[in-house]
Image (cartoon, rainbow, N blue to C red; front, side, top):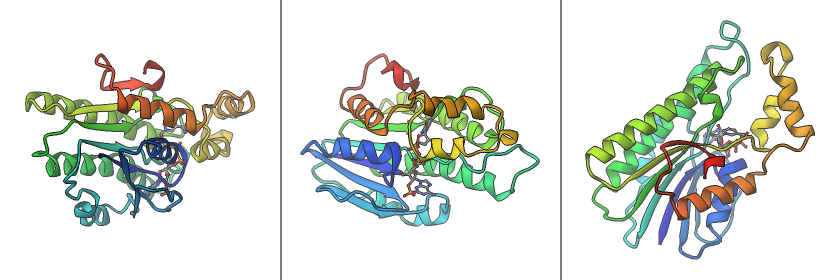
Length: 241
Ligand SMILES: NC(=O)c1ccc[n+]([C@@H]2O[C@H](COP(=O)([O-])OP(=O)(O)OC[C@H]3O[C@@H](n4cnc5c(N)ncnc54)[C@H](OP(=O)(O)O)[C@@H]3O)[C@@H](O)[C@H]2O)c1
């Protein structure tokens, strides 16, 4: 059995990826989010709010149980939040804690737990982190989000470096999924122009039909997990797959 531990399976890209993977009879998905919206055979849900760091730490034994029949182990850190769109100096202070807890601290804790728990398990292992183009350049109104995704990219590169030095065959990726028609994009389109100067551009993506569907992206990520390209860099974009 191939075991996929995926965060953010409540909606959007994470839900589409989980559903795509579950079409295979040898796939089991352990999904983590605040809402359970999938009820399929071989899907197990853990209701966890990833912004609550201590709650996440307490649940680690449940998230990473022993799988005696594992032939492959995969961790997908997909859950992510944009936070409140607005300029630094004009925001609620709690928002930074929320963004970094969900987008950086939770993936870091889960990567650590995954590597620790399954260290002795001699099967292929993949860690796939869902990053963003916004981690590569500044976007006004999104400072916390941009910085959190940049942190996820460098964290992923460092973990891959460590695993290479430890001579494990663990593969780590931080993939930007492109612009995808999910609730996150709805939130972006409902921002105020004064808080986000690129509002028109993002509204046009929707009206011109330029957004990818979560199902298309889910299928591409499934293909990546099933057949990892040898030359794929740790930090990549979905259109490079
Ligand atoms: N959509 C895009 O254009 C785009 C572009 C670049 C990168 N991304 C990245 O892609 C990933 C998925 O985004 P999406 O577009 O699918 O967003 P989405 O539709 O808003 O979905 C976010 C997912 O994260 C989960 N989540 C949010 N807060 C959580 C929390 N506190 N605890 C546990 N789970 C939480 C949600 O489930 P619950 O609500 O049930 O908790 C949901 O499944 C994110 O990392 C995002 O940064 C998206």
